Image 1 (cartoon, rainbow, N blue to C red):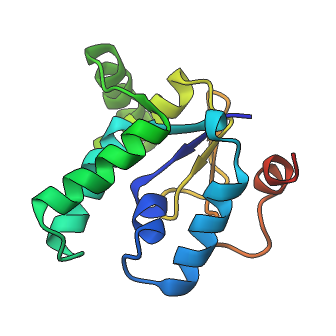
Image 2: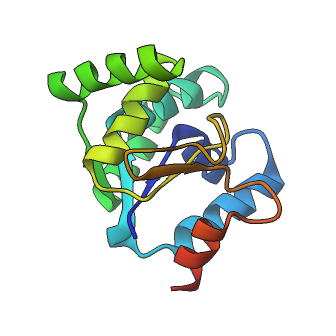
Length: 148
């Protein structure tokens, strides 16, 4: 099962904001098969931005961190076709266009899950289910992929 990660999961793993969530984000990422993890390029850009603005990282440090994520997992680029799909999705489902890019990137990469704290938990579209990995009880799809 392929799993896309939103920027908030990456940011918690990098120690932004909440230490309990940091531990959980690191644990989930470590338990997922590396070949199953997909990173929408939009999530990488958001991660860089937050690392600099709220995380007090220099741009060089933020670049190094984002490069590590890019080098470790598959990245889905934001193409013009993906952006077009995202604007239609945003119009139909009232997601922000940037969240719509992430959802559509997950769909294009054939992900079954998109882990995100900030989107509509349980929302399913085009085969992708958005799951907040920090909620208890754990969503059954996430539990299933972590058991494998």
